[in-house]
Amino acid sequence: MLSYAEARAALLATAAPLDRTTVPIRDAAGRALAASIVSPVALPPWNNAGMDGYAVRRDDVLQATTDTPVTLRVIGTIAAGADATQLPVLGPGEAVRIMTGAPVPASANAVVRIEDTDRGDHVVAIRDTRDTAGRGNIRPLGEDVAAGEALFAVGDRISPSHIGVLASIGCAEVPVYVRPRVTVLCGGDELVLLDRFDEVLAGRRIVSSSSYALPALLRDAGAEVTVMPLVPDTLDDTVRAITSAIDAGCDVLVTTGGVSVGAYDYTRDALVAVGGRVDFWRAKIRPGGPIGTGDVRGTRWLGLPGNPVSTMVTATVFAWPLLRALGGYSQTSLRTVRVTMRDHFDTPAPLTYFVRVALSDREDGGYEAHLAGPQGSNLLRTMALANARMIVPESVNVVSPNAVFDAVMLP
Image (tube, rainbow, N blue to C red; front, top):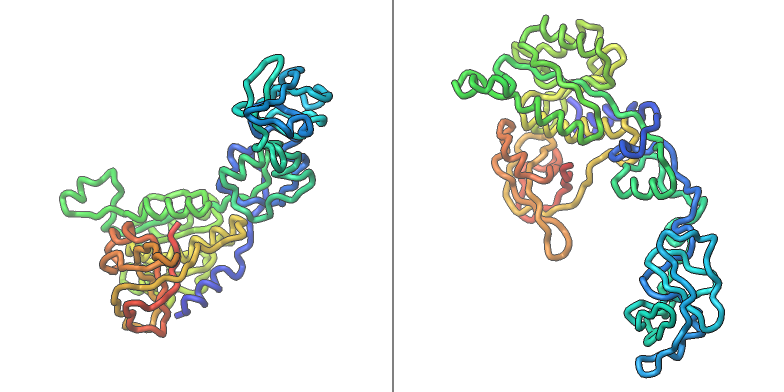
């Protein structure tokens, strides 16, 4: 049995990003950048107006007040879509009406808000210039992005805000890493999918919740997920299911159940039967001790335990960072924060415990944690009530109120 740290290190030791590709910008959200992004243009590409108003020469309006307005001749109007290369030139005593975002003539160095004028069309009275202090309501060229500036790095996760910037600099095709392809195999004679829920109502079966929750978590980690039909509890069926998954092609095979020491736990034997290799199959953690990793004909294998809570906990702390590493993300781990525990909790075995907790904000800016509910590995509802997994090290056998631990924030 490996410790939590040893098991995690062994799993991630050879996890390198998959191939690179390009995708249309509309399909890039959530992906990891496979190349740094350098802007070919400045943003904004010209000095532009930060307000609707009048572009002026500052020296012409310095003495303007409400009681003694300054009158200027209006020589034109510049709309937001105006050609920045075809702008009027202001002479002494002249102004040009201008809209927010419109290019500012080089001969102007301030924009007076329309609210501080009489809104004249041919002649305008400037009544107040206090708002033109500093840069004078002008957004300077390159204020947001300079031409040639490196904006985003390899491994950055592309958010909707990234998409906006990429579009602004003309990046129609985005270099990204290939999403890892994951095939999920869930098994157990007691399990059915939702199309057979009548058997659940009759008391004969239970729903394979992991067939729904696990793929959702893996997709959230950035994977393309295929879910195979439920596998019966026989060695031959398990061999056939694994063979079918590998033949269909995937980067990671994720199985649930069948990796413990029960009479019907066939996964490890089936892997060996099809030419696979088991690297390790137990870790000193709770929930989720029966967890295995290995290789099947060049495809990574991650064997998660069958209890629904154990499946989701181990998927969070093992499958998530593995898929993020394969997907090329620079940040592979979920966010970890320090929390102050408010409840009592016993951890009698020398294991690393992942305790389902609900975090709330403290007045000092930190977090406090409360048990999300009973911690049995079959109690799935508390998973939904928790927003973090508090990590209790092997050396701790009693969690007392006010003790401080690390907690992994959930996706």
